[in-house]
Image 1 (tube, one colour):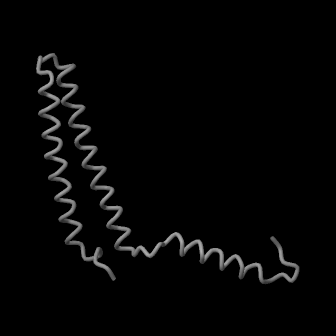
Image 2: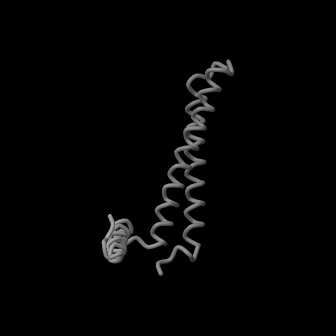
Length: 104
């Protein structure tokens, strides 16, 4: 898209870039963006903790040969849930004390 006069095309491009940035930002502040990112991280960490502990319990039941089926899985899921909850609470407390998370 060229302009025969050699100028003016830049103004149109600048306007389109500004519109795209305005649509992308949606009025979210930097602190809100950090809070959203931290929330996703806490959730993923919690789910990961429960899944890993459940896998360990399943492995104990199936490969250890202890005849504990399904108690290894049940116990490890409960422990994983407790550990995930504890870690989520710790992370949330750290986030609450960070002054950079306050709205500007």
